[in-house]
Image (cartoon, rainbow, N blue to C red; front, top):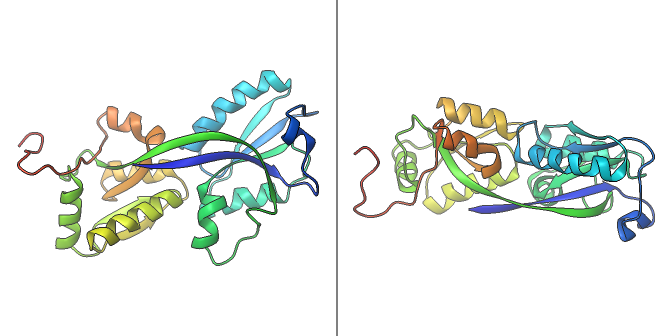
Length: 231
């Protein structure tokens, strides 16, 4: 399993803001937290919980704005260009602030210079899932199918973790799989469940309900001599 970090950030001031250092700042009007992924994603769910906690603490409405697309570039650029007064925040992850500089040729924002870190929101865990109707029930079976049908086995992604994890599985397994990118996790999960995409490395928070509800399955490590469920 992979872990992914979340960090609350604001447009950077010329000098480090006192409220970020001392925690004494209070907003004078509603605050917007921009999320770089769609509603229903793990980042969105965590941000909405945080917004509910901050609302009474700050005495101002805390609004969540989903700005999915371009691997988080749209959201990060919007916040970087906003007034640096603490009223527009970004719930960022490793995608806009760590992976994009390596994955993309050009960014309209500086991941370091354009932002001031406010606080770390936590980590969440990723796992590999397939649609429940898929015959794949282990990582070995996924690699076997990819080896037998080069380029025909697909993996979805809704963020950089899905991109890098899927490519790593293919590279380490010595197979060719086709990457299918999405603007965010929820539509990618929909196509995995429907069988339009073979598999996906996705955060547990955005996929657990589908696994528990029987719409998706988590392939297990292959154990020699072990039978597949129902075999």
